[in-house]
Length: 221
Ligand code: 3PG
Image (cartoon, rainbow, N blue to C red):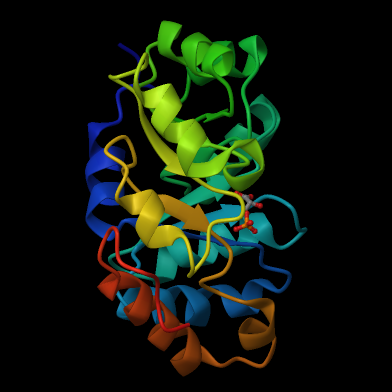
């Protein structure tokens, strides 16, 4: 099976951290201190969205300068995005959904893809292509925890990373679902802390998030 589908390494890394910060970085100079703060707080798998001009340079810098971090690219919409992100040093790719063309292109990538799915049909298409680990997106808007549980009954072999509307108040409940490996979200690195370079504040947020127990009532954030 091709490399983009065969992703036990990615699943193991995500299962260990349980939370993937989704980072939209406007200034590449902030990438390294931000990644270091999150990693020091225990969050070592990072998704950088390809939504800014600085995104590829941010990935390049984190991959080159921050040890112990697995950096991936999010918002991968097509093969061109993917190639640029891989060349920049992305170790995994995340897409909000998936298309036949994206799946075809992924057959040639040397890094794993976490494709998005929000419905049973979308999950089945990914399953047919060999994927067993999917991003459930947009999680809250697509029915949240009850939708995930319902998908889990017929799709017992599929695991998810719910993203979209996940935050301090509901992450523990998501993590308690048996078909959830980890959650993703932007709340761990709020723009207001990034903008003022409050790396200690972000490290503390990361630490608090790492301490959350599945099924508990949430974090102190
Ligand atoms: C993503 O790109 O995965 C989402 O935009 C993150 O969603 P959130 O901002 O609601 O966490």
